[in-house]
Each structure stands twice: as structure tokens, then as C-alpha cells.
Image (cartoon, rainbow, N blue to C red; front, side):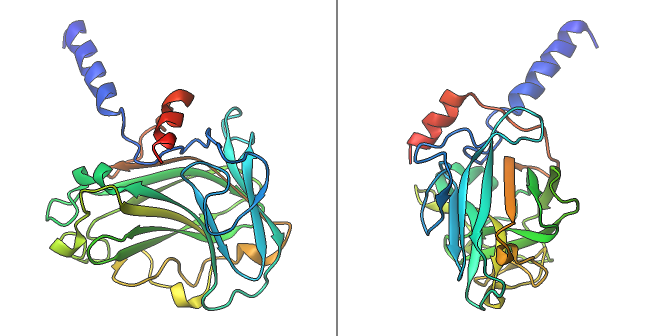
Length: 261
């Protein structure tokens, strides 16, 4: 291959990787409401686009942190401020982002050509064990997908990669017409990071289900101690079965995307 051809191929590959991250503010740069520790409720409180949702007998805060796996950058820190050692069946605590439906039409959900997604992120907590992520599709028939991951070492940044197939669990829910995502300004997908969930929300991992389920029975109860913290950064959700390097956007670009909402 000539040098010109090599350069063209490189430019093409780089272009293909632009605007790949479906998540907004995945590097936790933008905190228009508050950057300091703020008690989580049922709405947006600190990081733009990220909603901490706590409904237990305890309480937690979220805030912007300079603790970062690569040494420079921002992360979201969650901290238990009132413990709940026994999560009730209908109680829960998680952090999630809604993704606008019209930004997801290229996923081709609702057809036999529905595309796989890969989620990658850095996570850290003093509480080790099994955690879960969930992907919720509210349009048409609502479907949920849950996958487990493990925080192996306390107080240590770990990178996780999870591939979500449209036919996970040998299902055809997403590839059928009921799996379609409407082409509108509503919520097309919701990506959640579970911290605690009661038994009413438990399901089987790595399969799409037509139920209001967001976690598994293996999920730790992160709310059980006021010593517990949880850090998250460089969250990327992209098309394909392979995680690629995190797409770093300028602060101005990320702020512009956040201001839409």
C-alpha cells in the first residue's frame, strides 16, 4: 500500500470513530446544577444528563470528583450518607441516563438487522462484589436487559466492557416489531448503573425480558454502610461488539449537548 493510501485509510478509520458515543457527558465534565455533594432524590441533581434515583430507607449524595483512573479528568462520586442495611422488595438505588430516541434510529431496533452495542466504563468503590447495569427500552413494548459485572479490588479503578446483543438470551424481542424505538424526542433507551435493588426488580442476567426488572439477586446492597462510595467515569455506549477508546469531546461540545435538555 502506498503512503497516500495508508494515510487515506487512517483518516477514514478516525472519521468512522467520531460521534460514536451515545452517552452525553460520559466524562462527567458538565455539572450545571451543582458540583458539590448534593442529596439524591428522584430527579437531576448534579451531573448533567445523569439522574441519581434513590428510593430506600437510606440516603446518598452525588458530586463531581477529580479522582480519575488516568490521573487527570472528572468522575461522578456517589456516597452513602444514611445507611439501609435491608433493602425492601420495592426499594432501589441507581444512576441512569436517558438517550433521546431520534438519536438511536441507526440501531435498527424492531428489525432483524438490529445492531449490537458495547458499553465500556471505569468504576471504583470501597465495596467489592457483584454489580449490575441495565438497558431499558420504553417505546412500544417495554423491554429490559441486565448484565452483571464485578468490582474485584476495593478502592481501585477498574475498566469494564459489556456487549449487549439484540438477541441476548436467544430472544427475538428486540428484533420483532415491538422492539422498535420511536423516531421522536422521547426516551429511546435508558442506561442504568445499579447500586441496590429489591426483589421485585430481579431478573436473569444477559437476556432481554418484557418485565420491569433492573438487576439480579447477586447485586450487592451498596446502601448498607455510610462508608460506601462509588465512582464512575468515561462511560461509552457504542455500536458494535468491541469497545473502542473513549471519545473525548471538548467541554464546549459537551456543554452544548447538555443544554439541549
